[in-house]
Image (tube, rainbow, N blue to C red; front, side, top):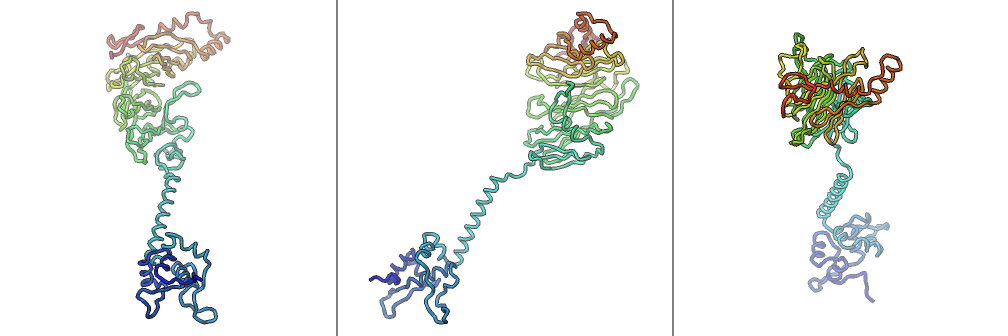
Length: 470
């Protein structure tokens, strides 16, 4: 009967251990593999006991604390190491795992280290794929006292700035003046005082911030911050100007700004409105993405709205603006070529002209008449907001009367139209007996009082005329 507990050659030993003869010889020499030789036998005659090989495997693997060669049993006598079941041994000596168990200590440490590093690398990769780093891109904001706090898309703070304005307006104000122009509930144009946009194509979103304060003083500064919070530039609105014999000091408020790629080179230009506090004039400024002034225009009264559109179809945009002129006490509509923005509004009285400013370069400057019987206590009419249509027609909403003045893309006047606001005011005056019923051609008659500034004649005319040619 074959004794399966005794192996009688290197072939049988190596077959049981699952390695070749050379490996068995190396293990015998360096790791004390329990192999026996027959005294006086032929060279290379060896044998080994299965139990000793099993115990040696456990010792080398660290799996059995009592499995040491030539240990004493509980009776104090020397004997064979304890045996293990075939099933347990089979589990330990499969393929590469078995080879790793029987590897020399230094090799085994290297293998263990390699596996630890591999597992760590896989875990790190999984973490990077599942857990994205915190975005540093400006996306939102908080106002905390005089501090502007800039947030990432997840609402986490990425940086903050002390504006130096102790009575800085709060979260609600800047939240209502964020990113783009809009119309409020009264259809008045409201411009941003805070915007997050990549204005110079550097891949980062700049933060444009116009300081606005509760006391409305010393606030005419527009800040441009880089995505990381560094100040890129600042623009101070206004300057000392004399109109007639009156000095208007450089104390201006920024009404708001808007952004547009006017020259279509990828960078965004900044169009900014600022007005003298508490009076006039109003400064309209065109800045490039680096804060350099490209053009500025001064109006003897406030601008209320502006928009950008290609009116004449030449592939380049024009700037259309609406507001009021204090000398004439009427609403006005103007058109500018962005490449030529300079000078001041056309004025006749010396008190509304400044020797420090040149003639304006506007293409059109149009006066819109007021309705004489409305609000006699406030005899001023202003243009409140602009509406531009796909066919390039323009409608101007008048602030006090609520009438709409309509023009085509060549700025030919098309007529006035009524509104609920206008009709409600007329009905109240009729009910109070303050006016007689306006004639049916009232709006047509009013339209004849629309006046254009003729730049060549230096005079006002009811016929369509240009201040300067294209």
